[in-house]
Length: 84
Image (cartoon, rainbow, N blue to C red):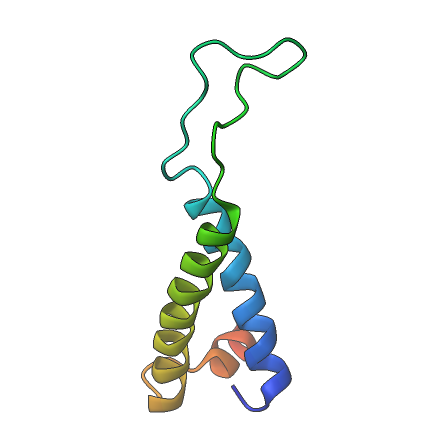
C-alpha cells in the first residue's frame, strides 16, 4: 500500500466485511416478544462489543494484508496491471 489513503480504504472495506460476519454472534431472540416488536429482534444486541471485536479482527486482517503486500509475496499493483 503506497500511501495512507489506500491503507485506510482497505481497512474500511475489511471492517465492514468483518462486521457482517460478527453481527450474528450470540444473537438470541425473545421467547415471547412484546406486542409491536419483531419476533426476530435480538434480546441484547451488544453492538458496542461487536464493534470492538470487529475493529480488532479487522486490524489483524489488515496487518496480514499489509505484511503480504510489503513483503512482495503478492503484488496487488501487478495483479491490477495484468487485468487490463
